[in-house]
Length: 280
Image (cartoon, rainbow, N blue to C red):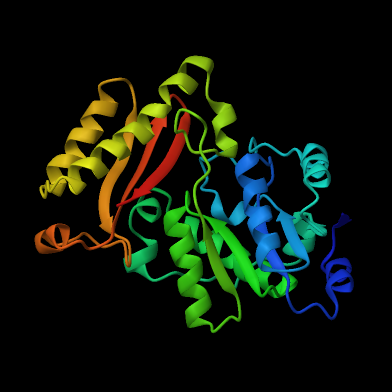
């Protein structure tokens, strides 16, 4: 595996390649990331991964400074897995050589709801860095996990509207045995909170099962799930049932007519904020 730190080095490695598959990450790699890269290898050659902790997507009171940076361990994991040909690991000066005054602003009806409501500017930061990475890597395929469901939809919408020649593939969420979605932030959890963290997925399952059984009072389902978590110490930002196609609230008739739905959640356990979702 080649490890490069500059855009020039990256382009030298990829010159003439037309089937590049790309997996962007912020590092601190776990089994979920490695699964994305295995999928990328099935859809392109060579596979490029990136590791970059993107300051633009962190709010002023979020965890940019303490976000885990484990490049040496990440390189070892990638070399052992042998799915990645090039790892692009730039520093901030390389990817942002001047102030990033040009930003990508997602539409409000998709970018300012759910995560966008609780993390203002987050999706602007994500979209801007993804567009810049796509420009550097020029992939034919990019693989994103469904755990970040809203992010996946925004990246796809950005590619459509800018007519980027990138096929954005969705990878199923990789979970621990108890259902907790794998995330680099899970290591923030204390041992007792790690046990308790599986309750988030359990509530998503409960809401999904109720919908499949014909329950149509979405507001009540959302409220009950939030109250159940809050009764055991969670701080819930949202548990929301939305349409898969646009993340808008479903109409009553859509719930009973089989409209594809998704249940999304974000909640804090102690100081650790977790997100998850489950398609219906």
